[in-house]
Structure formats: structure tokens, C-alpha cells
Image (cartoon, rainbow, N blue to C red; front, side):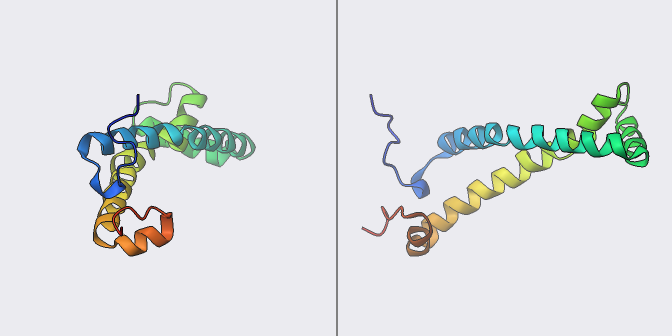
Length: 117
């Protein structure tokens, strides 16, 4: 069975479909956050002042019970709300508005020319 939105133009998606896209975008950034945690852990292990800073920041949120938790707080948890609640939401809203307002430009960039036909 083909979903009702199959072949539907991005500009015509409703709130429910945009919410699903937001959830998919949230899942898609998990590898980036895992990699950020690994890289920051490596650098914090080499630099005691960076580790102290991480513990101080995590302590501010009362989450400095463990070094790994502190590193997770500064490398992931601080940025997660901004990314998911602002950046991803704005990106979806702006992309939908661009697709609706400037269909020829959207077509040129994405190849999705449904509104131009």
C-alpha cells in the first residue's frame, strides 16, 4: 500500500508530515552526536583543563557525578535542545516556505518540480 503522501510535493505537506520529518531528522543526527562525544572525550583525556571545564559545566547542571556524564553534557546535551527545537524546526519551515514561494528555485536545487507543472 502506498502512503497518502507518496508523490506529494514538499510545499504541500501538513503539520503531521512535517513532524514526522522532524523526528527523522532527529534520528539522523545521532551518529553526529556520538562522534562528537568520542572526539571530545579524546581531547578531554589529553587536556586536563578541558576536562576541568567539562566538569565545571556539568556541575552547573548538577550532572558532574561521573567524568563520562560530564563529557556527554558538554559535547551533546548542551547542543541537543538548540539543534532539535530550533535548527531542525526552522530548517523544515523555511524549506517548506521556499518550496511554496519560490517553486522554480526549489526545483532547480532539488529536482522536485511538481509545482511548476
